[in-house]
Image (cartoon, rainbow, N blue to C red; front, side, top):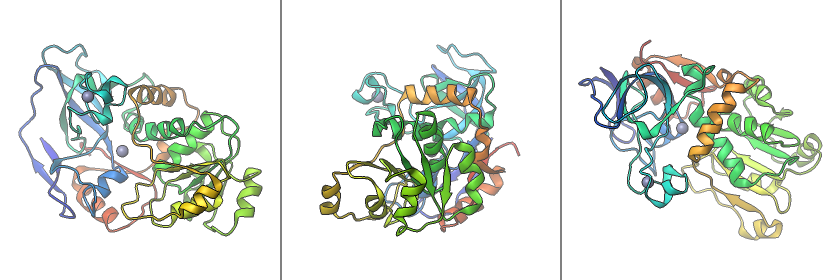
Amino acid sequence: MRAAIYNGPNRPISVENLPDPQPGPGELLVRVHRCGICGSDVAMTGAGPLYLPHGRFGHEWAGEVVEAGRDTSLPSGARIAGLPVAPCGACDGCATGNPLFCEVNGFLVGGFGEFMVVPEAAAICLPGSLSFADGALVEPMSCGLHALNFARMEPGSRVLVIGAGAMALSAIFWARRLGAGKIGVMSRSAHREESVMAMGADAMFGFDPDDQARIATVLDGAPEVVVECVGKPGMLELASQVVRARGTILSLGMCQHGDPVVPALMTHKEVRLLFPRGYTVAEFESTARALDRVDVDPAVMVSKVIGLDDLPDAMGQLRSGSRGSGKIHVDPWL
Ligand SMILES: [Zn+2]
Ligand SMILES: [Zn+2]
């Protein structure tokens, strides 16, 4: 089988022939149909400061069970997506439904390959109407749900999303469905407006941090929740300027550099600055159900589908700062 391999920080991704994996007890052999490139795949194989372990990678996958090991219950042919960590069930993180904080099991990756072996404990069955392309969006879409739950956003809240990439779309989607009042989006990427509006935003405007009056006009007041999805230095300071007093800033941009804020100004406004990570099992499952019933086509998030052979180049371009125009999906069988 063929799979993409991460060879170390900033080294080119390679595509290699590997032995076909075999499922052990409690494991499933999955034929991967789609796997999305996540901002974290780019950040954690590039400049750091956090790095993936060397080897296979890709965690936003969906596929089909082709062989089930001993002590499993899912049949061949089951259509699944997966958590990026198999819950051990015993540690603090897993016991509270937060397997991303599992103290026993490591990160479960390998979506950029033809096949992968997955513990059944990490598998989530895809609802009927979801395609594999939709299924590979459950993981990134779950992050927006978790972020807004973490913020305890009240229905009717005014929300400002900074950025228009995949995380921003996820935040807009969930802000709308969790009952936000007005949702404004600040982004330089005018070509993303159609996707932004499809997800449920009320207005998108250019990047003009001085224009607080315009933000207030669009939202009918200063935003109670600001969701930072750009991840460049300066964005938290911008968010702190525009957020309403006693509002909440969500940092979702995963900035890899220092991004200073002025504590006195934050204190003056009594701002809550939060750094949500990932999602709970329940949030992952409710995202799959929501995408099944949804009135928007989640595929508007995906700008391009490429094969494994094009992944090294695509990763190289993203690492060198190319912003692209949306999420790239890999179909290992293209
Ligand atoms: Zn991801
Ligand atoms: Zn655990």
